[in-house]
Image 1 (cartoon, rainbow, N blue to C red):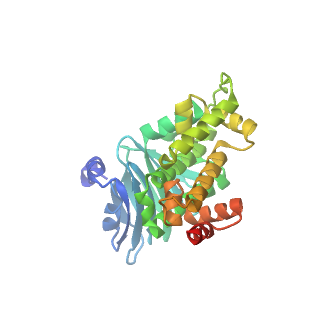
Image 2: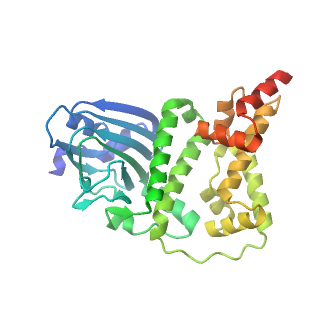
Image 3: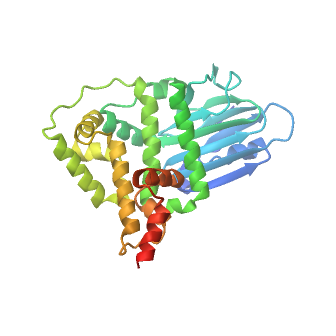
Length: 336
């Protein structure tokens, strides 16, 4: 397709609202193609019947997460904005899903750099989850956590072949993010919960890329792992509303992810991510139990401490403390 027939995705990206959540329904393939924000697309419907499609998308300052459904077989000419990477995870299995000339397998994830046109062929009743991330941001994240650059396959190959269980975890995470924000739009009002969602996506992308990376040897220059863990705990408690992530810690303390992992396993017997989550759970519990706390609802306290999956938060809270967070709040209110 001549590129002149397609709208500019660069101008759309520069002009669009970069923080929000929306769902669009279309009854025409061309209208549907135009509903995916900041993309440059042209769809050809290949099977007869009235078309229907939907796009649910979340924007977090240059990070786009979406779910797209289409009712009929469609040939798609697509291009995402320059300086980005797109990752696509179809929920439909089989050789009828193709990117260029390559057929998707059960372990396949599509990846394409921004500014480069590509083609998709999708079957009837198709659904795909997608992420678009700034190349600079993912590069910095991987460099901070792994100490190396992103793998070259992100630009040179159309399909990444990963473990099926890793692909399933990625599907689960993206569905949960979209479902949680749809059910609780107030999540977007809290910087900590927005940052936590962003960090979850970046961590998942790093895990997908890790098998293709050449790992560097562990940094052994750290003199005191115990001091490192203590300093990290202090930073988290002092800045709990910032949803400090593992890459933030690696950058702030000049350590690799492997060094961090080994330090936490030696000092507290768990991974850095698990330890930070436990600290946040304890922080919410104090907020719910403290009579001087400004938080009047469980949701508000949880979001302030960086929790976005509220049902999972409740389960984790009860597992940790033996009671639901609502019970903790009710007991506080009863003491007043």
